[in-house]
Length: 195
Image (cartoon, rainbow, N blue to C red; front, top):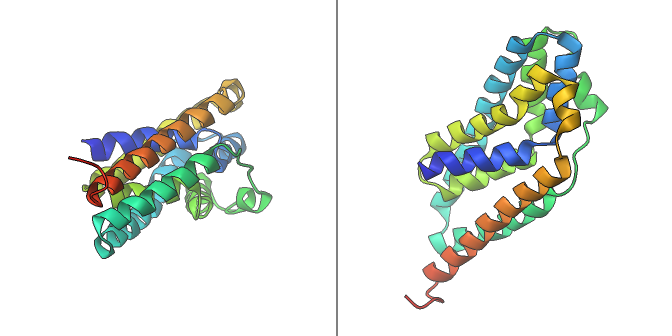
């Protein structure tokens, strides 16, 4: 179940204050129809994270476990630092899908906004690290929903009241912890730690 719980927690924390959360807020304010927006988030995230997870799973099959652990350690450390930088919603991303209804607008906007986003990168790394691909994808998708559904439902009230700096720091600590664990695994697999 570690393949489910850790991705859920990491992505939920990393998503707080992310541009897709700002996008959810914008879509909620524009359409005022939460259910189609939530379903758009679910479908876009499942498709995006399934592709990201497949890449992570594939990469993990190409390299030795020790090399993979070193790559994961560096990647998790980079995402920990990236998490500390506040995201801004770009106007182009906000306007995508404007002429469609809330479901299609959310589906298109969320899918495109997640491309290259830290939660997509985290999904690649988590799928490479944890053995159960399906549980990782379900976990990362649930993490996105934990962070975004309250924003859709509560609108500005929730977004304005959250201590974003503190939450970004907690997410960064989580990624740093995963980086340290990956370093430990790499050292163990390389025979550099006494058994």
